[in-house]
Every structure is written in C-alpha cells, then in structure tokens.
Image: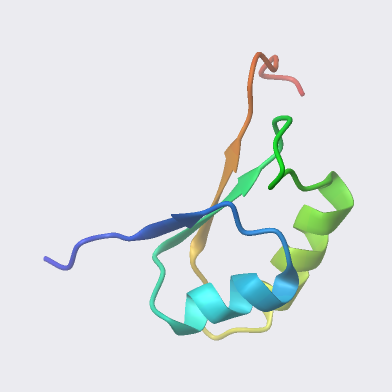
Length: 70
C-alpha cells in the first residue's frame, strides 16, 4: 500500500499543479486567517486547473470555527 501525501498551504493554481505532478495524494487549501489563506474564488481556480488532469489529488480545506453549512 502506498502512503498518502498531503501538501498543505497551496495558494495558486500553478502550485497546485506542481504538487499534483510531484505525486501529492491530497492538496490542502487554508480558508482560515493565515498568510496562506485562499479565497473561495482562488480555490475554484485551483480546482479548475486540477480538473484538467487525468488523475487529480483529493482536495482538503482547513477552516476554523465554521459551521457545517458554511
């Protein structure tokens, strides 16, 4: 069984693609207040870039004190 690797703090489509091409199993995007924080629009841009790949990593969001509805 291959280990899963998550690369967190990705904030641009270019970095998301670089992580995917490097073998990342998961890509983490920080929505909480941080210098690595991404907007929803930024996350959508990363998702669109990754959707062009034959196989794309799973996506994970880092949030703080958000409701499940949010």
